[in-house]
Length: 196
Image (tube, rainbow, N blue to C red):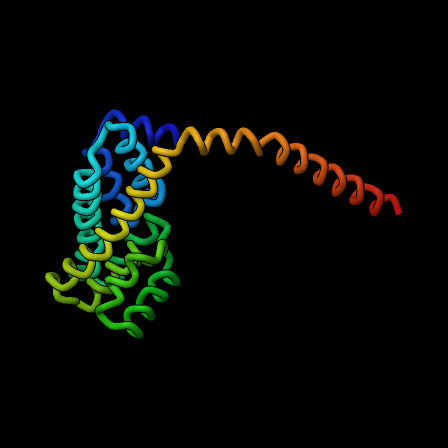
């Protein structure tokens, strides 16, 4: 976590853009971590809210067009070949294809709010050769809403970071002691069961 904060601190908007391109191109970069950290930097005055959202959204659109283009121009076999590189299985592709088949073109918008499907949906959209303009419009709407929500969560967390830290400190010691006591009881019971 600290590594990403430091990276974003040093690279700013460019770092957010590149990480979101990677995330939307199905590389293992979670927007659920990147965007709230961007929001945290907004709360610290290091970045500006709407600029962060705009850069993140543009990066996501670039990344999703990479996946869409693989499906569109190279087809299903290429998607599966690329999928092996980024640990994207045939089963996941089949799941997204089923979603696409049952919900139609609007699934591109809906899937943007489902963590696993939000990046994968570009592959079947490309494979069925969905209209590029419609794909971009649906994607942009879903991505923008997602980005605004996650950056805003980061801003809220940043503004309340002292209160959050104090709360954690207040409850950490009692919870830690309780966890140790419970673990000790479980180990003791297990040892007694083995002896009998």
